[in-house]
Amino acid sequence: MSDRIYIFDTTLRDGEQSPGATMNAGEKIRLARQLERLGVDVIEAGFPAASTGDQEAVAEIAAAVKDCQVAGLCRAVKEDMDKAWEAVKHAAQPRLHTFLATSDIHMKYKLDKTRDQVLEIAHEAVTYAGSLCPSVEFSAEDASRSDPAFLVQVVQTAIDAGAKVINIPDTVGYAQPQEYAELIDYLLTNVKESERAIFSVHCHNDLGLGVANTLAACKAGARQAEVTLSGIGERAGNAALEELVMALNVRKGFYNLETGINTEQIYPSCRLLSMIIGQPIPPYKPIIGGNAFAHESGIHQAGMLKNRETYEIMTPASIGKAGSDIVIGKHSGRHALNQKLEELGYRLTRDQLTQVSEVVKSLADKKKKLYMEDVEAIVLEEVYRIPDKFKLIYLSSISGNMAIPTAAMKMEVLGEEKQLSDFGVGAIDAVFNTIDRLVQRNPTLLRYSVSAITGGADAQGEVTVKLEENSVTSVGRAADPDVIVASAKAYINALNRLAKKETDPKAEQSRNIP
Ligand SMILES: CC(=O)SCCNC(=O)CCNC(=O)[C@H](O)C(C)(C)COP(=O)(O)OP(=O)(O)OC[C@H]1O[C@@H](n2cnc3c(N)ncnc32)[C@H](O)[C@@H]1OP(=O)(O)O
Ligand SMILES: CC(C)C(=O)C(=O)O
Image (cartoon, rainbow, N blue to C red):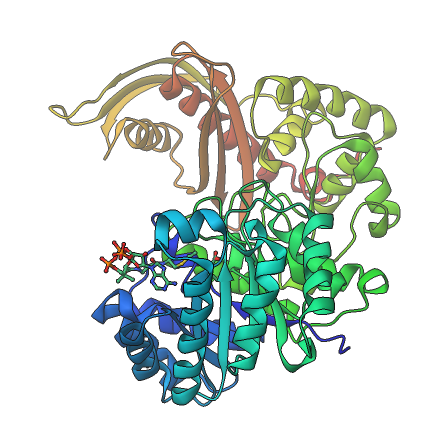
């Protein structure tokens, strides 16, 4: 038996059945071209009988794609098959994919057909599809809940009628890995000359087992896997392409199976899908999520810094993603903190590192997300205490949709009290403009972030700003229950650091602390 697993991507068909994932023809073509780049073997481009729009989109994809088969799904109904064939017939490698349910519950309640009738319809449908298209796939819908002995009869009928691919779907995500593997093995053993067809699996994720079931089936002899990017699909979705392919790659020694997927195109493909359907990739998603290569805990980070393989079983580059990330948070240790600070040019003594680490941990206890600017501000606060050139004395702010945002402020500037008021496009802008005029500087605001340190409407607002003037940058941070006051303090804090860098450039540039 060959060790090649054919990847049948159904993002454009089953994936589109995911609520909210509808795509227009242009978007489908863009995604189909990306799937071709990714190296899938078959693109199931749609269900042409569903609508004229779907039929046209499938036809356009069929014309655009050259390197893989293009399949159209159709019921075991002549009219559906004709529409599907019309759509895929100009493909370099067309495929008709027809299906019919074989479980007792589907036959009785949905189709209102007997077993004998289903056998007859399957025979007629595959024969008719074969008269149109050289490559016919037959799916026994709800196969995993079908009587296995009857399934053998259906599959035998379809192969005898000319089906080249036999799909055994776990339509409702009911199967368990070992049981599903045994079903595939049972069919391969009991269908006569089963080698005349490629056995395929199509697993749904209702119990979160889509990929596990697909892998178990492949190990048992299935050679086509029907998957979608990011696992989107009807209900809880389908087996995710990226998870299946990377499991086969990372555990090659265990499976001894190969795909033709160019894994470096995995992340770009899933990103493109996410942009098209307007649904962000959840950070905790395996392989492609933002956290998949992020390390937050001290023990993990320390291990990673010594040898990446202590906590990573694949590289981000292998799926086309930028490098791993050490994230400073409440579980981080001093190894990681030191590494991140060294990347920014800081050299701290052991004692300074311990001091900074304690403040970082106490801030992380209160704040959901720590930015490196927060950590940098702590270092500057704890290690380089700066005598303030600029101080806030008072601030009053007016804003609202019926007022011109105005700030009136009094500050101590180089030992002298000054007051002024100015406008802005919003309250914060008015405050920053007023401060600029009071201190007579005009820095560029590179970053402004505000977050709640505690919960509730009375939460402490924590503001971080990053400024740049004459190619020198500085970070300021402040907290206050009033975010406008916190913003003013953070801005003034950053200006003090900017001023310090100008008067004592050596200390700030080298950032070397003895
Ligand atoms: C498991 C899957 O994911 S299968 C694919 C699911 N995808 C879709 O359904 C998307 C596209 N579907 C559609 O646009 C529509 O359902 C159409 C155009 C196919 C049919 O629309 P309608 O004619 O309005 O029928 P409707 O969808 O209400 O009912 C489905 C009919 O198809 C029959 N049917 C279901 N599967 C099959 C099949 N494989 N072969 C033949 N008939 C089938 C049902 O028994 C029902 O027949 P009935 O009208 O005699 O009761
Ligand atoms: C049509 C088949 C392959 C299907 O989508 C399913 O059974 O889930």
